Amino acid sequence: MIKSGNSIEHNIVMETDICIVGAGAAGIPMALEFEQTITKVLLLESGDFKEEKKTQDLYSGSVSNKTMHSPPDKYRQRRFGGSTTIWGGRCVPFDPIDFEKRSYIPHSGWPINVDDLADFYPKANSYLEAGYYCYDARNTFNPVPKPMFEGFTSSAFSTDGIERFSCPTDLGKRYRNRFAQSSNIDLLLNANVIAIELNNPGIEVDFLQVATLNGNAFKVKAKFYILAMGGIETTRLMLVSNNIHKNGIANHNDILGRFYMCHIAGNVGRLKINGATNKVQHGYEISPDGIYCRRRIQLTAEKQKELGVSNMVARLHFPKITDPSHKSGILSGLFLAKNFVSYEYGKRLKDDEEDTLKLKAKHFLNILTDPLNTFKFLLHWLTKRTLAERKFPSVILPNKSNQFSLEVHAEQ
Ligand SMILES: Cc1cc2nc3c(=O)[nH]c(=O)nc-3n(C[C@H](O)[C@H](O)[C@H](O)COP(=O)(O)OP(=O)(O)OC[C@H]3O[C@@H](n4cnc5c(N)ncnc54)[C@H](O)[C@@H]3O)c2cc1C
Image (cartoon, rainbow, N blue to C red; front, side, top):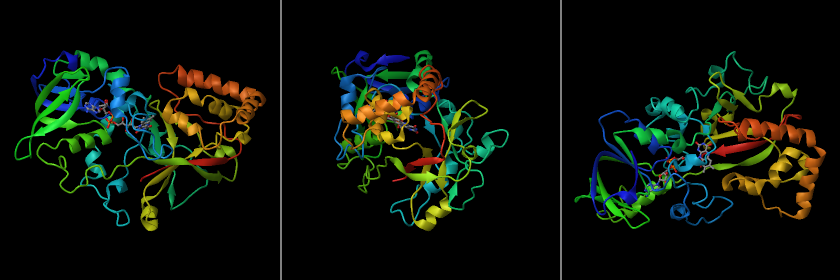
């Protein structure tokens, strides 16, 4: 059943078996795992079905440098579905090394390893509509695919890993009806958890304090509580919940919130590959289960350890969009359309260069002198992305020269 926190009796204590806070990528599948069981689940969500300014403003905050990190209300969505309402859909599991204690990374090492997640990844793939749980090109495609770079062998880099792309599935839209029809899972919208109240002596949760922006307030008592509000909000809630522990919950060592990790990402360098262009797997391949997949170049775990560096991957990318000397009508079209693209993606089409009329004119000229490719691209984008249920994940240019930049993602 779906209700609004505004419809709950003021100051009442709601009781349930499991209370999950946050209906995003983590909270929605977790709640649905209890479908058709006798377990009563209450899913508390701050937002509504659509973005609402007053609620989204609860995510606002400042960052020290907007070019290095987006403002916190820009890259997260506070509504049913969470940030999957705007995400890109790229799916990859963690690597074994991500969990290991590495002498060259202070405080590294997790109390779980990749095997502990093995049972959950196939289910996660399924909720995200990303197909089979297989992230190695050699076992994904049939017949066995060509290597990413024909003739390339290296002990430093592997090129068999793939990324799988979700539709991208907006979990709110996709699973809303299942909540509406469930008899044991209740979804409560407009319900902000504002404090976790602990019992004395502070080792058990007494209740959660919930408030709506319209002034309603009530409590929730459960046998189990799960916080799934995203990395930052979960931490904030634990820090402000200080009725017993003055530094917040589970913060005896003063480390809560100190290991925040975002993407280190960007386009760097220039890669020139020798040989014919058809010897390079550059764009998206479609797996037998109908999923867009992309190869990636990854520094091997052994090499990471030898060099004392963290995990990193790279994908083949096109030249710098903002610089019109690429002469591509497609890239210039993207540059000129940047104000119509969502914040997170639009900002990648801007840089420090002044956005002058002269620069715009040069890009416009590229479109005029490259009309056929631009038209072909627009048609492809319209049919395979705009109108398609499963969207073509990103812009791929024909490989005419075997010259690329590298789009790098790294562990912080
Ligand atoms: C533009 C963009 C592109 C992305 N692309 C990718 C990608 O390609 N691949 C990838 O893996 N990830 C991607 N991500 C990141 C991905 O969307 C997030 O990592 C993921 O959504 C996090 O899931 P979550 O459940 O932890 O948090 P969220 O999805 O953010 O959900 C948290 C939920 O908690 C609710 N909430 C918050 N505070 C409270 C409160 N006090 N009380 C009640 N409810 C509360 C929020 O409203 C929200 O619904 C992208 C993100 C963005 C913005």
